Image 1 (tube, rainbow, N blue to C red):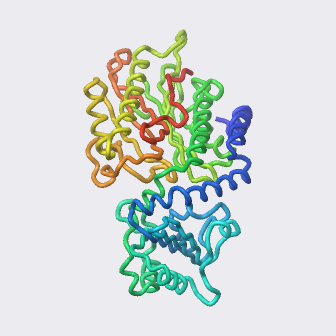
Image 2: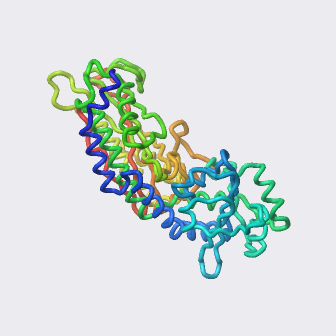
Image 3: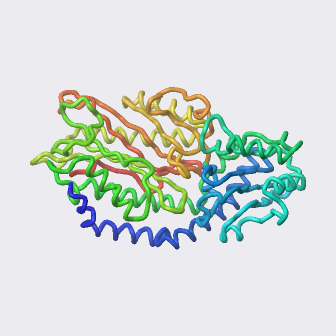
Length: 434
């Protein structure tokens, strides 16, 4: 396909830009200012809860340039893209008042001056400074970012861990792997973030609807790869990023390949996309899967069997959301969901995951695509409130019109849990028709 075709779709770009401007995510300067407000809000409402719940009264994050701890992108403002040479962030929670002292050691940016307290004295290096601070505050339990399970909890390099222990001396005995604290910090969504997630979800929906339509697709000519590159180009033109793919594939009568790629789109095909985006300065990711049917000549709707299978997939969404609302752990939600689906005659797969700062985010695993069973460790994590998840699943059935071929209906939407579980920006209500 001619790559220049993307630039003829200015109506889509304008529509999305208007939505982003209304949400304060565009232009870039507005997005930067919004990201600063989000950081301050998270430090005020998320961090105290995370430290109290995890039992830490101190959190130390040392890092160095070009080896940045992944958690730092949630703690540095927009004008501090990476550590400058060496640096340390330190947090101390007063166990009596609950007040958080937010400290920076090493070089810092202009925006950080309004957020963090510079505690390094002119004659000190960063290790002398952190050693003195720990002696002064005398915390009982210090979290550091080490974990055998998740990469985003394991950002402390072995070298800097050794240097930190040397700097703290006897207080190094108070150092503990801070997985519980980091998970809570990353997993919970602040009120402002919830609003932004809705706006980003709306944009993702707009890209899917346009890409899966005659406005872009020329049946018999456009390939699934063309649609992928169109989505990438649109995301890029907005100044956004795609954290995977996007992936577009199809199912076709007579084919055993349930995810045909780089295929010319033909009448009768069942299309599927998986797309996720993030903005430049706001650390939130979307993740969605929608389905579309390409009408044969003379058809005005998808075959009834496809509509019925789509309804089953929607019913599976409802089941999983209900179980997430009432279950204690990810495994509980998964096992109860597939049990209920089976009782209702739905051939189900559930592989829902946390979503937010990272696409495959911090929190409980609710089934895996390649492990439809109990998941040790991550599956036993609690399904927390004030969190976002990618409600990812599929329902399958044999389609008689396709010679009893097994067909999958893949769906994924962003949901938010706070007691009950709800869609952040609605869901696909019916098969898109092309």
